[in-house]
Length: 108
Image 1 (cartoon, one colour):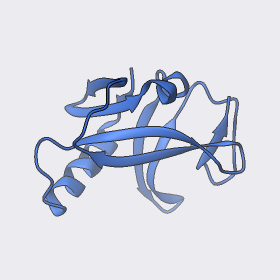
Image 2 (cartoon, helix red, strand yellow):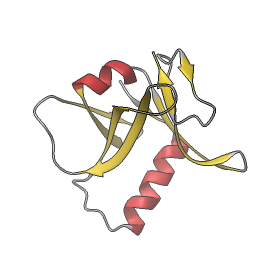
Image 3 (cartoon, rainbow, N blue to C red):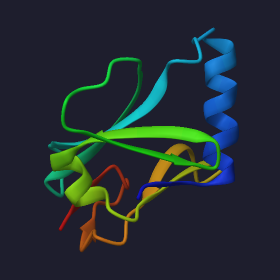
Image 4 (cartoon, rainbow, N blue to C red):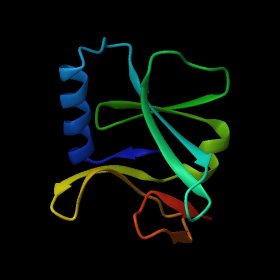
């Protein structure tokens, strides 16, 4: 399961509204190679499912990820912060053994 915090849900709804995205668009989360710790998160809106996609819905938000990424994202919570310490989406990932200082990459 991939979870969506209330803060992330509100920001996703705001972006969908401002971007005039149709209801068939969902949040696609993936893990790619890169960053100081080896792996980085990627977050997009998408409306095309792929054969091995894992589909979840939490807090009224549909989240889709590929099977390989899901192995790294199991039980992760997508959050959003608008505070002075940094604005943007973040991932609270219990599988990460190390994260970089900027919080954009991780290792398992």
